[in-house]
Image (tube, rainbow over all chains, first blue to last red; front, side):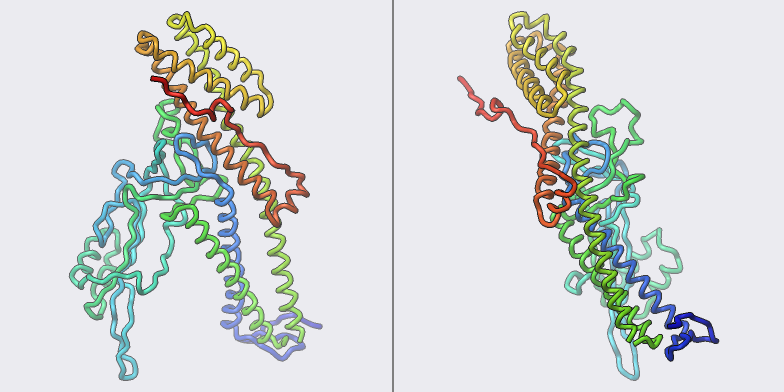
Length: 285
Length: 188
């Protein structure tokens, strides 16, 4: 059997076989296969994280030891590291805000309505503190996973009550948004119907953290009154696990179990489908 | 038709890789759990050492005031010596319980000595040792949780097969002494 490939113009021909693949289709199929492998690998990573969380007991904050730790406590802002959520104007350490606008689209003489994203923003403070009944500890959020994720929403998760003026103001007030985006978003054609979603982690909210406990760079060696003051939780140099969630441990495990199962299943299915189509196109069926 | 064989072969490879990854994750998980227990024990040791180092200072600060409480101080000194000589976890746990008991007695007896209670050095030492005692209690709890997770995992299916191959056996938890289990009697 001869399975050597050679280019002949815009198509790939398999010597000795009748099939051929358009180059763009072949790139898409091979990309699909690689994407499947990537999703499977992500699923495996979530599965591994789930196992680590299951096996790790929670630490009380006053007795945190250096290395990978898991804590659950209440949020306390660190200095002036406080955000104001764009829609609800709440003091928080993290927010994810989304506004959709109902757009009318004319298609072949018919009008179709569709929700389009008008504003999306997620932000987290660089530092915050977390405390329990025994003490408090500093958390450096850079590189954390969990909260900073793309939130998939159901239509029932959204709220209504924003008008065009309010949305324009939210967009105008956002100093971090590039000007061109402001013009695009504020000037979009559409109805005056908006829906929004906002999640904010406020002071006193419960938060779950698993990360690397290391030296607190803001406290001089030996200057800490309590042992936990000398510690900061962050993304470890060697251990890559750093997960922050508004869910408790059981909720985090449930989410990771679902994500890992979905990731591995979808990844394998995508790989098998891509491979099958590649083989069909190559005339190997 | 060769395509069907390629797909079948691919699916078999995927399943085989999945099984290998799963077995590797169980093996690595058990190794991590085993090392977590060693680490948890090491973290207890650090605090035991800190507390042991603080005891001579405490004894020196109270000696002058508690001349009639020789037994309490002798018991504490003996427990400290036992802790310093302890090599096994069981011996350390026993000496740890003895020190905790002797310290409780010492702090309770100190209530009868107003001058001692007002001594700045004693207050600082008492606060420092009480802080270490609290941290020790947390770390014992952490050690027991780690040990419990490990013991459950090595008895669970399918981890038990790999645990057997690794010759892993159940680990003992930190036990509370019989004295600590007794109800505190309050006399009026």
